[in-house]
Image (cartoon, rainbow, N blue to C red; front, side, top):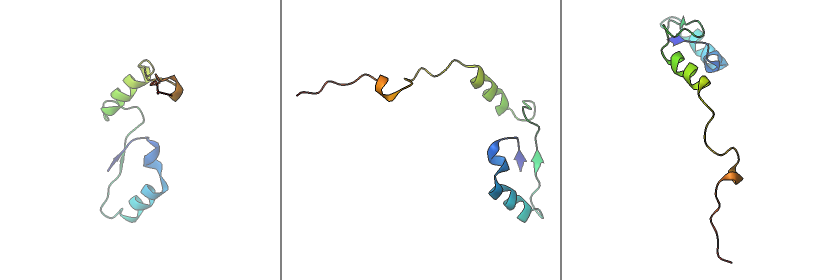
Length: 69
């Protein structure tokens, strides 16, 4: 199993699973931010540099439909 430094890879349940199955499961830990070994790191770096979302920041900022009174 390959693991990077994602928070979910440090979850107690996953650690317990890996420890319990260490007779057949091999863990390979990648260094953080290693795009050569973990190609998805390049996508995360791009998203971090991208402009903020164009979605409205608040739900009340969305256009309202008119209702008949």
